[in-house]
Amino acid sequence: MKALVFQSYALYPHMTVFDNMAFGLKLAKRDRNEIKNRVHRAASLLQIEHLLERLPKELSGGQRQRTAIGRAIVRQPGVFLFDEPLSNLDAALRVQTRIEIAKLHRELGASMIYVTHDQMEAMTLADKIVLLNAGPVVREEGSIAQAGPPLELYHHPVNQFAAGFIGSPKMNFLPGQLARIEPARATVTLPDGSMIDAAVDATTAKPGDTVTLGIRPEHIVISDGSDNTTPVEVAYVEHLGESSFLYTRIQGIENPVAVRQESSTLAKIGDRLTLGLATQHCHLFNGKGHAFKRWIKPVTGARPVL
Image 1 (cartoon, rainbow, N blue to C red):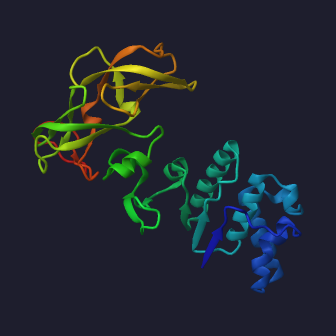
Image 2 (image 1 turned 60 degrees about the vertical axis):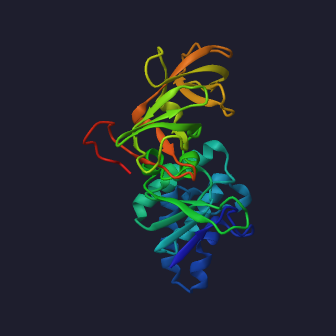
Image 3 (image 1 turned 45 degrees about the vertical axis):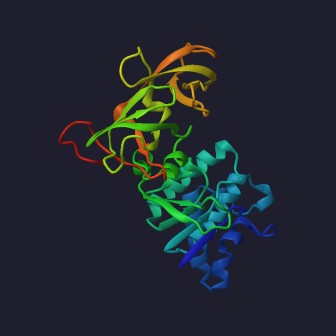
């Protein structure tokens, strides 16, 4: 049996929380005591026992969503289908309800298929993510861009779409050309002439090929100008409290390069800095957006991680 939890809650406004949760069981002509026991057990799991006599209009958004989830739980399905269940909640309630759904998953042990456009929900709730790509044209049939555990998609995306979708801010993409190719290392020339090494196996390509270098904001450091660096100018600074993000410009590259820094950073708009790109954290994509195999260490005998 499957149970669907909607984005819009879909509660009957004239029924109490108890009756909303019990409605499906009543239609199935379940025993009255069984209905009562199932509803109270689900309400206890969701911490809404004190709300069973209230109408939906007397509930907060989070309480309504828990009622909708409880209505699914009482049916004891083998599979839960969640259709963007947190989309109508404010930021604080989204975090709270996300934690409750994760806890519920552990306690019930049932399979859950969860549809969301929020990568935070996908990363924190999923055992396995199936990332769908609708394609360049809306009417075109979509495809699976990548499937796997959340951290696999984060650290080892198989294509540029997956790399750009997971992560906030998303991965930086720098256009360039292959200058040198070794079995466990490739050197890319950026538009400003900087030479950047990436610990990837690009032996299926050839020098001069157009490629895209990818690196996440947290894997870039302010450098002293040694190897694997490029000069930039700070275009904008975001102070978030626990950290700061610098948005920088590389000569010849249109999109800004995001750099994560400690909250105490003193950088300001107009500053000229040198960015160091961690070789082992660089990704490389060919002209079709497919990732080259990354290596754990750019040394002889290293093993590929993709």
